[in-house]
Image: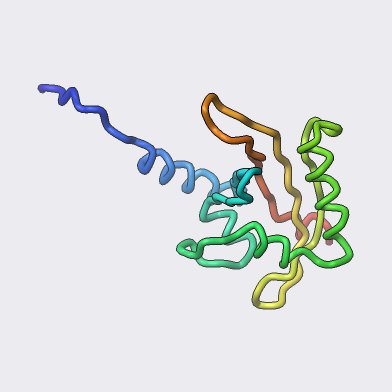
Length: 133
């Protein structure tokens, strides 16, 4: 067998594998670019929030789903993490999905800034509704 010495971009394959893992765990993965507020998310993240896999979600859309009673606390937790007053973002809150269903979520994240990249908040979200009952 002869190997092709071209550089291959395996990110699409790897991303696909991660989606399978996250879907099996029911864990949503996301990253938020802080300078631009651009949100990247896994299909399992979109499913948790009640959206199809092909939907592009924005940070504003996600904030709009958080119940008003929880929104200020979530935003405070994000600000404390970004300002380094809190080492890890951890928040439990409720959302109202587009179909009207209210779900309890737990989100955890850390700050990340790989070489040459912008500052990001990288984390996971888990639906904990069944644990709250």
